[in-house]
Structures are given as C-alpha cells and as structure tokens.
Image (cartoon, rainbow, N blue to C red; front, side):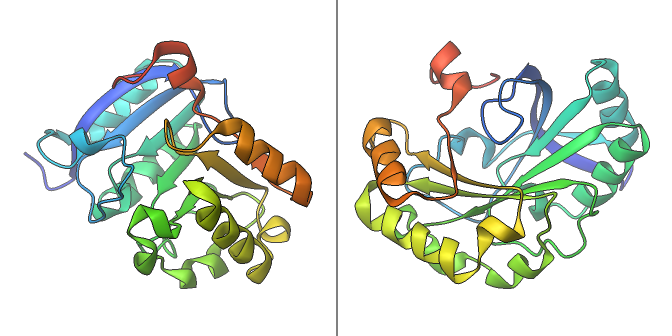
Length: 216
C-alpha cells in the first residue's frame, strides 16, 4: 500500500445533519482513530479498526458520488497527517469540503478553503482540558465553532467562551447542540432565546430521520 493513504472507518452518502449546511446531500468520509474520549461520544466505533485506502482511490470514490459537498470527519481526522493532502485533492476536484475536528489538534495547516467546524469541549465532555485555544486565531468567516452541551454548567461555560473569544464576529456560525438523550433541546433553546445569544441552535437531523445508527 502506498504511503499516501488513510485509515477509513466508513464512506457514505447522506444528508448533512449538523452545521450551516444541515439538510444538504453530502458525502461523509469518516477517518479512524481519536485521541479524545468524550463522555457522550456517539462514534466510538471509529476509534479502532478501519481499512487503509490509498488517497487516489479514496478521492475517486468520493468524486464518484457526483455530490458537491464532502464532510471529512472521525474520530479525529487530523490525527492522520495524510488528511491534509486528501482534503487538498478534494478541493482540486472542485468539491466543497468541511472538516469536523475536536479542537484538540493543530489546524494551522488546514487549507483556508476548507470549512473548519471546530468543536470546543465543555466540562461535561471530560476533555475540556484538551482544547487547543491557539486554534482560534486560525479561524475565519469561512469557519464554524460547535459546542455540544450537557446541562447548565456546559451552557454557561460555552457562553463564556463565546464572549471571551468574540466567536460570533470571528466565524460564520457558532453552533449550540444538545447532547442526545442527556440535554433537553427545548431547555437549551429557551436558554439561548432568554440570553439572546448570537448562535445557531441545532439538533442532529440525521438522528431525527434515521435514529441512532452508523452510516447515516
């Protein structure tokens, strides 16, 4: 196998369930492996295993779907160095690429045309100490920041980071998401409305449609 390859858990075609492109047909490329162990993680199956695929074959597979939007996710995609040239090749093929990353890995080398969806980890995740705040300086109006929230402590923490780093002015969208089955969506929505926050509330659309399973 060529050195230019990635370990892949799954490649699938679905509707984007989160972010500002929610609802759009999208090809998802889920890379294997993650250095974090968030308490509420819903993709633990991607931590191990997977299949190593050459970049040239992986790009051909993605392009073959005939879909404009591609989401590179994990696990933690940036845990594999070849994620960067893979995304560059997708861009060269005229695709719109988003990257879902935990916020614990350096994003400084990510192509500015890639939409970074940076996930800052609140306290209940158990991984808030892993947030690499230096990444914020590399965010632009092309990018998004996501907070996955379990309870009021997480909410207050997320609001504090929103204000401290002026995120609403720095990126296109700040996303507040309730943890599935642990945080009432209605309660979170009411907090956002009460505080008049400049954020986008979201639920996982794919779970609403298909339930809790992989490949959607």
